[in-house]
Figure 1 (tube, rainbow, N blue to C red):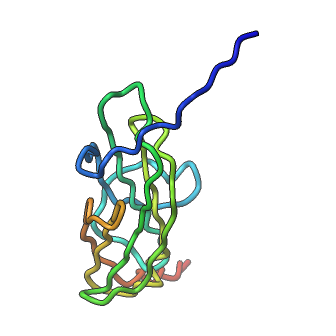
Figure 2 (cartoon, helix red, strand yellow):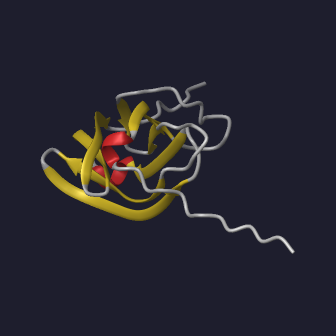
Length: 137
């Protein structure tokens, strides 16, 4: 009889996690979601914040971590989402989303915290959605 016992992945300290990529882009259907970084969004768009994270060794998980996205309009926090996530393999991505209309027009930022430590921040703007010009014949 053979028994195999697996140990849970060791939890790496946040200082051992490295940012590989960080961008805000528009969300939407698969045809529109191309992961193209942008800094300006229309009120009708969904903002998607993607952060790629790596660590060593690459053949081991980094354990469970508390992550938090905090969305700001100017210096005022507007929204916050928290999750506990198992960082199973590297590279690992976190994806946070918010409708631009929730933030409103103006200058904004989003911050990513891992285990209550600020890991990344990105700034962007929301502008009015252009009114379509009526077609004349």
